[in-house]
Each structure stands twice: as structure tokens, then as C-alpha cells.
Image (tube, rainbow, N blue to C red):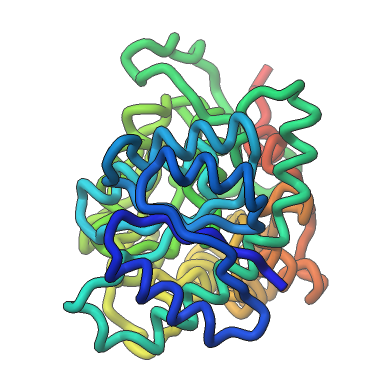
Length: 366
């Protein structure tokens, strides 16, 4: 049984969340809190497996409560977020502080999507509940310091020392021309961890399909661009991809890689409209394999489900190389597990070593 603490200053939202969660026989709501101070106290008193956390609350807001909980009593937290650019920025900051994922804030305006919201909420709660022991162990090993999903506190881009200029060449006989990354639940801190450790003159473009709503991908790209030496942007409808640039697929769309007369192009599209996830890692991986063949490097990071599996099959059939994040460092070991279980992963790598592993395929030229 997964024990949940529901934190929100709105009585309507608390009742709505409890109503949804109580329908699942594997979930039990063991308490509620109406502000951040009460949330910190209830977290210590009830020791829940998961906390759903609102942001704007009286006495103490959700971010401060999250910091206090992660410092004293690390617990998987699911942020309840408004689907606005302001809500996106706050949610991304919460994930840096240790929150594992987020769900849309329930309102009278989105009750028509009740079934989808119910399935998403319950699935995510049960998935991140499995990481409670991991968080506690990480907290213990850190000597009682604040536990977070990934250590990603970085200076701003303008404060960073530019990497020394150097020339890359591909190791072995294959020169990779593109890196494609598919990621979902727990993805923002993982992506930030990887990109922050890549140099600004990384020799090829990077395309990313991150499961996110449309209001989140722009702020996500802007935040990464400010934190990383490599350039990061939200992908435009169609553009030629450039080395040293990361292209984030806009939420609600798909990102394709196309080879047009020898030039690699990023193409944002609505198709396939019936895809379960938008953006879809399957679309990105498949088109990367078709467009770049054995010059495509595919990376599957943390995520629930198995999006990316079919696309990685195509990438491998075309001679590409596949890297999967390991179970120990994933928030949810779903997408990488599907790739690993299918025997498609050429390398299985901890998130702390992911950027170094990617870089190892591009050696400095003597």
C-alpha cells in the first residue's frame, strides 16, 4: 500500500485528489495539509511514501516546504503545477530541489479530462513511491545534507569559464553526426545534469524529446541555456541543425530528423497525431536512425512506459549506437528498461557518468 500525504491550500483540490486516489486499491491517503508548515510537520509525523505538493500556499510555500522535507525527511514528491510558463519555471526549480515529477493542477476547467488525470496521477504516485528507499539511502550517504534527484546547482552561464578550444573527432571508424535523447518522468534534472557537463563546442547537434506540456518546453530550454555552456533552444518548425546546439522538441508536437540533400534538418510536426506521447521518443529515435544511419547516437534516459523502444529498434537496424540509463540512477526505470530488456543497449550508464560516456565517443585530436 502506497501512503500519500496531500498538500494544497485549496479544499476543492484536496477533496478532488483524495477522491481520485481512493479509487486505487493500492493507494491510501494518510493525511492532508493546507500549508507548507503543516506539510513539513505531517511529513515527519506520518512518514508517507509520496507527497503531492502545491506551490502557492500561506505561511510557507511549496518550494520552501520541499527544501525542509528533503533536508530532514527525504520523501518522493509530486508537484501539483499550473500549466503556465510561470508554473513551469517554479516546477523546474522544484525538481532541482528534489521533486521527482509533476501533475497538472486540478481545476473545474479540466475536469473533462478526469479519466486521463486519474490514470496519470495514480501511475506516477506508484512509480515514484518505489524510490523512497533510494532517497533515504542517498540522504544517509550524504551525511544528512539535502537529498535531490540530481546534483544540478550551477552558476549562470555568464559566470562559467568557457572550455578551452579543442578539436573533436569520432573514436573508431564511425563519426557520429547526431545525438538523440528520449526522456520522461524525472527527466529535467537528468537532462540538466548531462547537458551541463558538455562543452560549448560539442561537435554535433543534440535533439531531445522530453515528455512535457507545451507551456513547459520553452522555459525548460531557456533555463538550460542559462545554466549550460552548450547552447539550448526550443526547436523551430524547420531548421538546419548546428554543432554545439541542443534542440528541445516543443510540447504537444514531435521532433523529426530529416536528411535533405545531405543536410540534417530538425522538423517539428503534429504527426503522428495518435501517438500516446507528444513529444514522442519513438519518432525522434526512428527518424534519427533513418536520416543518419550509423552516425546516429541514441540515448534513453529515465521515464515511465516504453516510449523510444520501437524507435531505437530502427536506429539500431540502421547501424546506430544506443545508450541507456541504468536502473539505480533512474527516477523511473521504464523507458531505459524497455531498451535494455530488448537487447538494444550498447552501453548501460549511471546518470553521473552519462555526459562523460557521450563525450568518450568524440576524442580530442592530438
